[in-house]
Length: 165
Image (cartoon, rainbow, N blue to C red):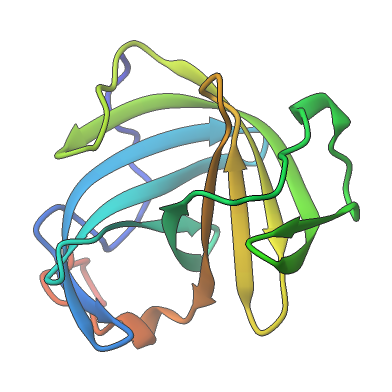
């Protein structure tokens, strides 16, 4: 597996924050490469014992949680931009389809990270900043539901210090 690539993120392991008034710690990270560059998925452990993810790509941030949905999930090859899907009773529109490669990982993760693996994923947008990601890297696709958030809304501390910042 490759080394983590320098990406200018201020987030690091052991940073802390809060989401919807629940404190969390940043305990792990996977780094993925796609056509436009890199993105990070930070593994979060909440004080209420939930595990979640903070996606960070090109200055956007999204908090999500793995959920089981009752609706059937289409095959990756059947997805297309602007197609609408219902997940957990809510409608979402496909906004991005990627075949990413997981290139590195660190810290505590809920799965074993080995040599780079393909991560075909689709990102969907719902109402009121809600979003979904469907990860096709496993035999049964994984569905993550959450919302886009502003960086300052996360009340992060323990960030990397950059010169002049």
